[in-house]
Image (cartoon, rainbow over all chains, first blue to last red; front, top):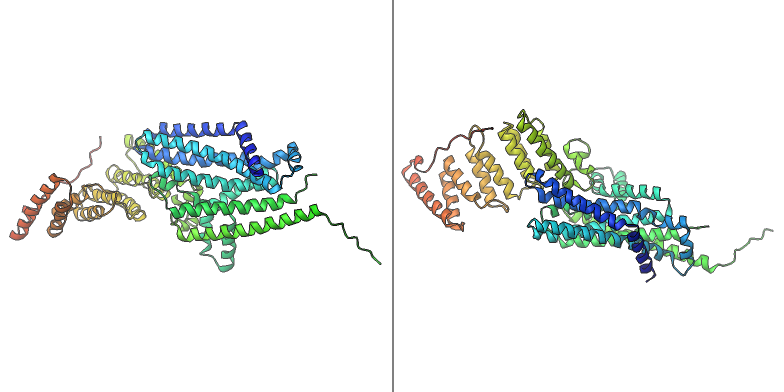
Length: 254
Length: 256
């Protein structure tokens, strides 16, 4: 309940900062650009719209995580508003959980709005059957953003906004390549293999949340994939937020 | 004698310590679960595309890891550029030296994006006058998407209209393959039968036309199949191939 109150406030803060509005406008502009560019695509305008529409959700979401998510906690420390909060009977882990939940809800709202706009454009082009694949791709993109957001909140609780953004970006880049890292590890000697596989396990497995290839062809992914991605996102976020809670618990604000 | 000072017990400090231990334990449990799931997903879900060797050999395909999971969008942008490249040279010097490279990159970035391979192959064969490169482009695309009826049909069609001389046997082979795969045009079986017939493979043509007659929902096509079957049967019975085999013209490339 306390975490939900913090989440509500964080969500309100993001709305008040006009971050949501900016994101939605940015996404819609990108969607319009894909339609303007579609005559150049020699009959592949639909594909262009779906691909770039889905990519824009991920990129814009990442941008918000890097700018807002990484400053969520440190901003409150700088403004000293955190003293008012933590002097109340508010356990620190719930405070972090609320911060993460609030921003994740904001990101999910933007993803849903942009996904609906994309579906509307695709439907107007006469392809209403893309609804399922767009919905699945948007869901997976939201899970991906939730995972990156958990890392941003953890770093935000430990470091300055700039360093937090750099660490989060590093994990995002590493996470995109962790599939390659696993394949690379399978060709290496035993010791190096263990090291590389450990690194691949620590990094977020972001390729798991990517079904844009299928969505661009209007195809659906399997329930196994969706289930695995959902469970993985939940476990990874729980792990990262637990680590953040452990570190934040011992932090002295004096 | 040294007296050790024992700090007084602090319930607040103990509570903090307890919560930290709990948080670490939770992180370990959740982390182990996440690692297990990640390994399970890597083992069970289909890999996006094989590109492990690209880490060592720089090529157009090496772009894929650099797209950070947005290979589809990168392929779309490359497609827009490829169309511009084709248009520029189509209207000026008709030199397409980079075309194969550009379309190979597209195919590697997005194997499910079939249009560039088809467009590139016909451009290379017709305007580029490089049939071998065109054939290779479509063969590579088909290797990446072996269940694509559309690619198999287009490869068959590439052989069917090969500039300088049709390759009807190969055309028939790929039309026949396309007719068995999802995504091919309804006319694939008819093209396979006609190509086999005009290549002189009358027994195969007989089988394929029989299949068209039995399976086609189009009455007009069934009537054509019936007529061709009669001609083939007559040709086989009399030993006069010319009854069933038509001499087809040589495809030419006319550029305006």
